[in-house]
Length: 224
Ligand SMILES: Nc1ncnc2c1ncn2[C@@H]1O[C@H](COP(=O)(O)OP(=O)(O)OP(=O)(O)O)[C@@H](O)[C@H]1O
Image 1 (cartoon, rainbow, N blue to C red):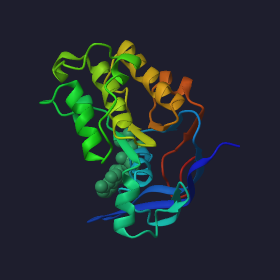
Image 2 (tube, protein in one colour; image 1 turned 90 degrees about the vertical axis):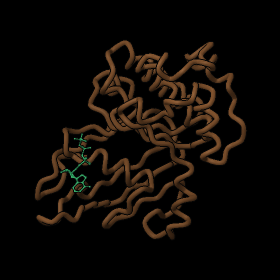
Image 3 (spheres, rainbow, N blue to C red; image 1 turned 180 degrees about the vertical axis):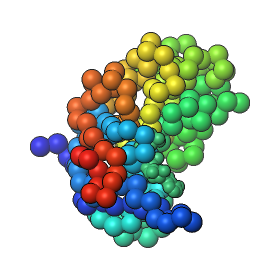
Image 4 (cartoon, protein in one colour; image 1 turned 60 degrees about the vertical axis):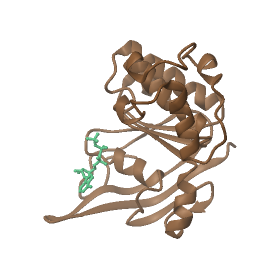
């Protein structure tokens, strides 16, 4: 039985808006084990991004239980939540949002390591994980797929144990998306827990498990 990284029980998340509360996540219950790629799938507005923010210890659920490596993220102090957040690395859908465009490839790895308090990064990972010979390249010299690949490698530089990716292939053509998918699987092999919100069939095909979120209605998600 693989280790449970996240345990999510009856999690509800509501946003307060001037026109009333919006339920973004309705009674979500699932576990995320350490092994294999986990995908959160569902139509626009079904709460995927909100769930990623809850898993990323960025927001607290309105109610329910959510543990990360056994730590109760709902009741922890803000200080303890900040410490836990260091274990998690976020990858957004637009490659330019994931990298410092004014730094070269090597310095992006260094910056990720410094920001998370990790030691000097292993630049050799570029050669081993699909970006050989690019250490001195400007970010603008990489293709979109290569930039997104580097975004995942910055998680290794930061020594994150969990990577949460929001639609990581949605702005890429199928060839570039393949680079990103291979990199997510490389990270999984290296023991990193990777959770992606995605409705890309190519991502769904390689997932070890898919949690489907339906539209949130009065009865909750269609299925989860
Ligand atoms: N900050 C916010 N304030 C108010 N409502 C929000 C906020 N963020 C999201 N919502 C609402 O919560 C619901 C779920 O949104 P969320 O972005 O989590 O879904 P999603 O599945 O990621 O959608 P998409 O694929 O379009 O990004 C939607 O109805 C959305 O309008």
